[in-house]
Image (cartoon, rainbow, N blue to C red; front, side, top):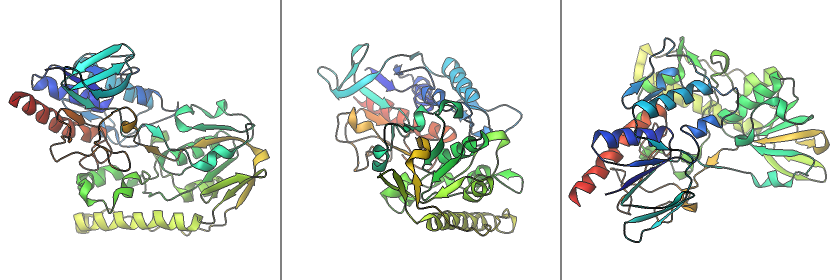
Length: 400
């Protein structure tokens, strides 16, 4: 029986490793090169989680800075080495345009290298694939360069003038800081995002959360489907890793605003909700404090109280002074556009059982945000899901 893994990133490579361990023959198809999504990050990108999180089945970080934060190219090198040593051959430069009902086999994959028949398909194309574009972003005049984060590389590429960054999760605050340090005048249109200190008692906050079992939380623990789309905590691994949130940016001189409302008559309008967004982040910090206190008791790290925050945001800005708009408003699933089977929820996430099978026999997903738990799409967690997928697939094939 033929098995195809679509995607040559961390999820696809982990699935390939697990399939090989079970003796399941397969092919891995990748539209670009191994780790293509990581290669497409901006030049100064660094790993936000600590270096110890560079871990896939059969391979782990073995450097001397487990609590450090490696740059983009080191992440790519880790995955490239893993592909060569731990996974099956990756057929690079093969774009899968659609997965359809098969003719002789269960599935037909239409690719730019020809059609492929398969009895099993594992979709591993990343946690999110489609940048979310706020409707108001389409209203800027052609004189303003509007780009989403996948097109951003470095500050010097942007035209002169003020830069408006829309979205304030991890990416938004990192780019706002980078642009400000490069001498640009920056506006950051803020939304609701959690934040944490970078380190607590000298240990990275992600390490604390891992020890506390935070990333073990199952999908069922979410308060509702919309929680799956909540922004990642504001943080950065740049320059060794440091605190980066609304208060830090305000002290630097970045102008913080509320949500982007619209553009009309040469004016950009923002909501008067900055204080509420900051309060939301502070509440999530309090939640984390409660989690750590409950898990570690007297041994819990000291989580400092947030400093006072004065919200006095501008409600309007002159379009004429803006040279570029960088959209960092998150990503959305894009599977349903090309995987032509009814296995998705209203938000486009795949619906899977506990063994990660779908309602369509032979069709699986891996590397999806919150597929099973909080670590499902993360490098040190995707291997667990890859093992479940490979085992379920192998059992199904053995029973056939």
